[in-house]
Length: 138
Image (cartoon, rainbow, N blue to C red; front, side):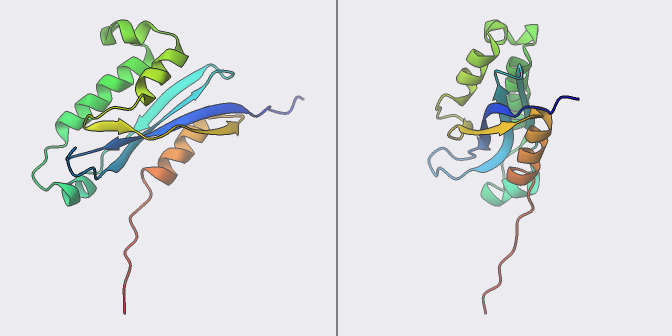
């Protein structure tokens, strides 16, 4: 039986920036690419309560729609147009290019994995879904 081989991957966080002027953001997703695994996928989720803490009157639906559009490109869906037909590496490059929109990518990070889907789930749970911790000062 052959041992699984860890191969390189790159990932970036997707951040909601409710007010471009203020520059505050919350993590709403992760996109992970591994050329050697032939893997490109993203996992997203907007926490309306956390978003409301930044901008109480903001409707999260347009951000969720934008994340769905990005997912269509990442997944290569025909309805996403020409971008979705590019090779995985170019779709990843398009997504992680700096932008000044309401959804912005973080810098790109790297690692090694033998299971990119499991790694994507782990990163999402750790970096996006991690519950906020309250701090008490005495």
